[in-house]
Image: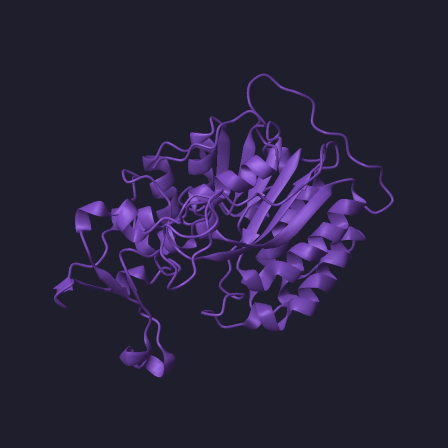
Length: 343
């Protein structure tokens, strides 16, 4: 659709539940949430390692590049979710995407006007991947997606805000913002820029279910209407007491590296989680997190079928299932679905 086109109509009701097409699906964070809510998904993912995990977890998957597909290839999909690669936007990356935010936002406007966008205009072609969900939305000329859920690192929020202006022009209600993952039951502190859009009904960001983590404030203190934030020890009780020393530090000085105890949420889980040191109460070095344990800290079930290579990177790149479930619920994908993510 272009700016001159009429507001799209919601997709007609089909037999069964809504079908979510998940772009850049990774090892299945959004799919795990949807499965817990009884919602079918189909994931599109190019990385063979993430595909191996998805297949082992029995998740419907198309192994391919998002850029080579369009809504016509997924005619049964009623809802769209995506978490584009963040390497050029994250602080830990090269920063080229952050440096080109103005150009990305300009490209959003060009796409809305029906003008072509050349990925080569960006210093790193991965930056252009953040535009792919919009291409899918605009290419879906027969019906709009009933809902759209997007997530990325906080530095990408201006891109989602540019998306919001386009989606509102197409008749969507849209909400954008930055969420704290621990406020939705994820056992780590992780901030994500999100977009929730709906064709029918008002779009809002999900209401927190858990308290925000504040260093030095005990887990049992805070707003009594909210659940306590979830600690590492809550999801890894077999480990007993331990401390985690982050692999990040100022100038590489270990003395400046962060440290949290098992009574606190984990630091943001990244692809380098295997580098975190685990220390016992007596100062003795303990075994580092297993793949299953790292997955638990990202909010996955303990028995998730991690497969393929580079599993820490798969885990670090995934959307935490409890956060995904909150976003899908806020998007109204299944109004009556219970928020059930395996604990």
